[in-house]
Image 1: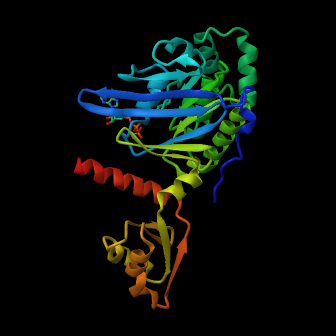
Image 2 (image 1 turned 120 degrees about the vertical axis):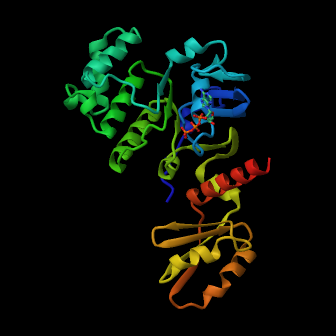
Image 3 (image 1 turned 45 degrees about the horizontal axis):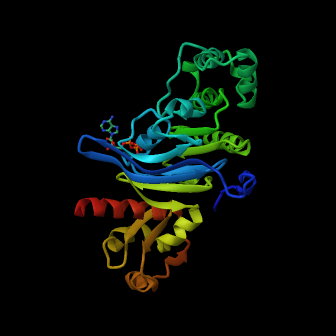
Amino acid sequence: MNARRSTTSHHANPSGGTAKAIDVQNLTKRFGKKVAVNGVDIAVPKGEVWGFLGPNGSGKTTTIRMLCGLLHADDGQGTCLGYDFRREADAIKRETGYMTQRFSFWEDLSIRENLEFVARVYGLSNRRALVDDCLEKLGLASRQKQLAGELSGGWKQRMALAACTLHSPKLLLLDEPTAGVDPKARRDFWNEIHRLSGEGITVLVSTHYMDEAERCDQIVFISYGDIVARGPVREIIRQSGLITFTVGGEGARQLADRLRGQPGVASVAFFGALLHVSGYDREVLERALAPYRGDPKLTILETDSSLEDVFIQLQEQAIAKGAGA
Ligand SMILES: Nc1ncnc2c1ncn2[C@@H]1O[C@H](COP(=O)(O)OP(=O)(O)OP(=O)(O)O)[C@@H](O)[C@H]1O
């Protein structure tokens, strides 16, 4: 089921159009001969939550770091929060909260001490009240004296979110904020993201989790430095043109190897007890499944392709393109 929030028109600006928090074109970064980000365009309306997806090493972190001025772009133009992203990095940093992949706080300081430290680094006034307010909003007040090093993964991430929102940023760039965090803590974390978005904060969040992608207003899928799909989840699934059948029942598992590589079968994957068999041509796909239709122990049904089906396909296409290049 698509768990997306209903969004966004309430964030439209008074002039009628929807103002952009991020509006960059041709963003490019090379490391030696390697092109990590290859002329990417991203335009995120203010107040929306966008998901940034892609296989490991596809350029998500590099893009995020260029957007907040931590990494110099080799090419590209545009604005972040209305500032020129190449020339006004300091202004962007002041109004942006960036959460890195790795926990980067003092493990031997308490939650409160960490937040007070961050408040000092930002030169914020009225620090005590600010930290109090932030602890309260993020449900950290009762744990404020706990050492950061003793927190579970979920609470660490919550503290990191508190730290990167302390200075009231307008934009949050979150790099895999929930990696390794349990489902309940992930859900709580996402509730916070949506609460912040409700306050008008724009969020770009990278993730490998499909359920998280489905909570975003739109997603951008990047592979080998290129954007290969973008849009609301349903739209990406529709545009993919992918057709999926599920195969269930006794013996379904044994079918996987037989179906893989058959004409018309683009991918075969297990989703719990069901086998998802996907392709682009219904007729050819039906032909591949036809020999098993008569088996009374098997149930073969057409289903909506999931984002994960599409994600796997996009990834395989990108790998094939990379191999052929
Ligand atoms: N400082 C660097 N020097 C050289 N190569 C780098 C550097 N930073 C990133 N890269 C390379 O650039 C490519 C993109 O990396 P990046 O970290 O942006 O990917 P990612 O999509 O964030 O991956 P992950 O999902 O694993 O975090 C990778 O091939 C990576 O090895």
